[in-house]
Image 1 (cartoon, rainbow, N blue to C red):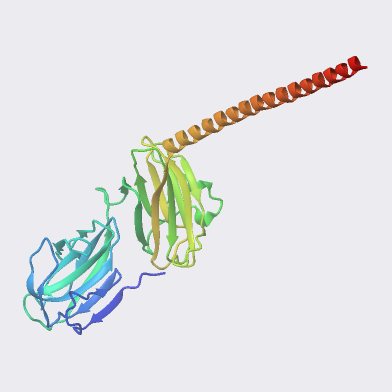
Image 2 (cartoon, rainbow, N blue to C red):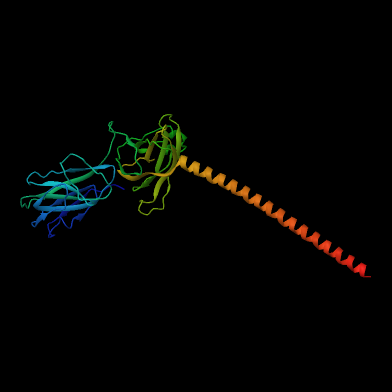
Length: 329
């Protein structure tokens, strides 16, 4: 499924768009006019803005991304700020320079001017993934990690040491992105993809310091109705401080269209802690079993001894009874 760039024309019909922003999905192109109603005061805690004309939009942000705002409107004087919908921290947006998204809550984007204007303002909004210094590979150190990934149609396939293990010639390479996971803990990770476009997903996980293929996951059905046709891939792997992982995630067949999928990397357990806990419960079970067996043997011995003693006492009573009866005769 291609990400369709929407063209949205919003007229100033709201009395105060700042207090009732328009919900949008990014990426998007906007054509908007500022309201003719003055916003006397904003909710910004870090910027003091009063008596402004506004046009406002609200969107769900994506963590580990930056927001890129651009415009081709030159005949209107306007500014833009980004407001965290949670704590109302506001930051001025500079066109063409990505602004980092710190959280995964909603943000309000406000176009404003101190002067009344009826000019149509065109704005483009897009997400930019965070990148390492080399501009290619993202190193993941904090979990959970979520990323909505768009794969251009012109991208070349990536082959790795996992590729040769695939008997299907079409799935030897991956059309996607590469990530490094470097965590200072012994953990068990779950890595999964949710394909929002037609096409099969795959994940290759490789030890970075050895080139050894740790796991190869072919596509499976996620049974997630929000996941396009429900195609994705999932794998669970161990990670250790001395062994960073290279993760290749994407599609296993080429396409003439741009495609997208969601990548999730989450922690499902502490490997060492789980091992210790398992050993603790194992020994607890063994000791409990020994105690139960010992108690059973002791109780059994006591019961057998009591039965034998009772039987012997009964026999002695019978002998004594018959002995007394004989003496009477």
